[in-house]
Image (cartoon, rainbow, N blue to C red):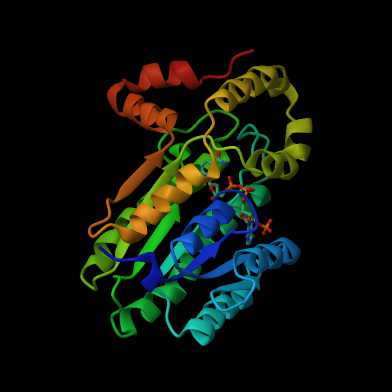
Length: 284
Ligand SMILES: NC(=O)c1ccc[n+]([C@@H]2O[C@H](COP(=O)([O-])OP(=O)(O)OC[C@H]3O[C@@H](n4cnc5c(N)ncnc54)[C@H](OP(=O)(O)O)[C@@H]3O)[C@@H](O)[C@H]2O)c1
């Protein structure tokens, strides 16, 4: 089984939430990390906390949507550690609002972060993984998807569609890279307590204020979130899955957590579409 101690891992979106929890777990397992996100102060503080010597954790602040920042991230990882064994594509956020009212520019922006930039960064890392001398671990790409990549919900389908698209890219890539000895894994978190909701509120405030006839349904939508909060998981629930994906001799193609995520995915698979529509519909 590959050990974390043999691996150099890039984690995007490591300044909070799942990315931060993943950094904490992987560094405990002995991995060498390159962590990235836009908030440089938080990122550097995390790097210092995890590795005061600076020998094993490198913080590279940057915006995943900028090509220059993606190039800088990959170059910094290679310069510091000489190789890249794994990429955890985690940076992302959600846009809310009724499809009718979300400005297309905001939809594009959400796809830019959650999908196009993830693909562009992966395109930079694949040749490095393919061409470097093989290490003890096979090269791995771990994409953080979502249960929302299988189940789209009203007022959330812009974000959900970014994660649906990520499912397709991840599955296609898995087939393409297998022949080169690289593994591609999708992790589908359920509801996890992080800064995700605050970031979504901020990204969607103007749309939600301008929701017209959809406004009376917001309360029902918020109540749904409140209920989910009761069963929410922790960042480490997902970090544990990333660790498993990086250390299993033969990683599974998909992982999910916590328990409610598995239940929702099972129900989506079992139930007729009409029943799923009934459960996720807008309610007052
Ligand atoms: N929390 C959940 O319930 C949940 C469920 C399913 C899936 N997910 C997925 O999990 C991933 C992490 O989300 P989270 O819950 O941990 O939320 P979070 O606490 O808001 O973390 C999001 C991370 O992404 C980074 N990020 C956002 N835009 C970026 C950009 N343009 N460039 C670089 N970094 C960027 C943020 O850092 P900066 O702001 O510092 O750049 C932050 O580190 C996302 O892909 C999300 O879709 C979350």
